[in-house]
Image (tube, rainbow, N blue to C red; front, side, top):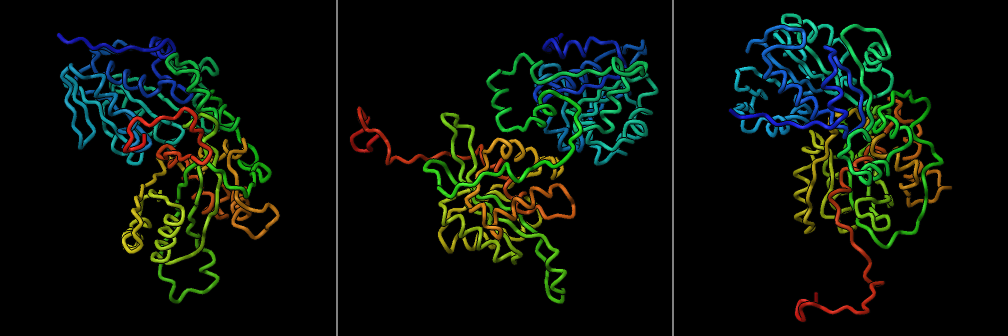
Length: 444
């Protein structure tokens, strides 16, 4: 008989051992929420009786619910495979269903299609990133499905302000009096397997508010603006070391024939951000961003492609990041055409929103860096008509839905390109004292 061997760290064990039927876990990034949720799904799926003393049959199922199914698969699918390896579980890739040896099914679902959970008989449910789910999902869909066998549920997530996740958290003991419920609050530090240096590295680019929310798992209300104009730094002297990246935020391309000029002005701009990533001391994974220029305008698909290829050629950039989608597809053929014509070996990297709202994605990428002075603009701070002033105006207005955020969005994508960059150094200052080539022909 094969034994299932799964280990938990002490804080995860506290949650697992608690007798509450419904558990709400607000924890910092990398605490191990997903791993805990996967373990609980597997243990519940294999159980013959639950905490309420109800005998369980194979017709009662387990669901792991993400904001959408793609997020659920990305977060949990590989853990399910790792933890059930060797016990005879069957994985159905197309439907994201796992069948355990006792016939119980574990389904990965997304709340982009909440009705998929209707009519099920559930023994256990996980709601991952509950703060991002519609508030009606639990009471109208999941809770009724747990009635047949007195099923259990686990809510996990990182706080995102004081919303329905916060209200649920506050209603549970030890804060509230809700029977059969319990709320747990752990920080990233409660995971003993996180290297302290790694935690400091994560903090490096976070604002204090982000650190409190993302790492300490505090429910905080953000009052006021995300960005302050005075936090942006200016320097027109290009750093010697570093590597350029280009990131693009594309506006939609549409026929302009017959439109009034006033209508055209309301359209978003396409923005091409040219940034030099400069290493900070010996921390090769950390950079400050020297933003050389952000080119923006309302161009046709062909002209947009030409401007991207020209920027790549001018700055010797081989990889350009563009958010995947219809706009990227609209310029793909032109990019290939111009890259071939001008002999630019262009590699287009598809960027994603990572299932985050635009406001969250931009704040995560930029707020900490800007606050700590690690975004530097190549512009005169007194030039009120420069691209830099347009960027700052967008930042100050953000996230007002009535304001443009095209330049800000293009800049935020640098965060996704940074891990792929190889840093080049200025070898004019290289000290050759004691240098001896290993190979006389190749010179190194």
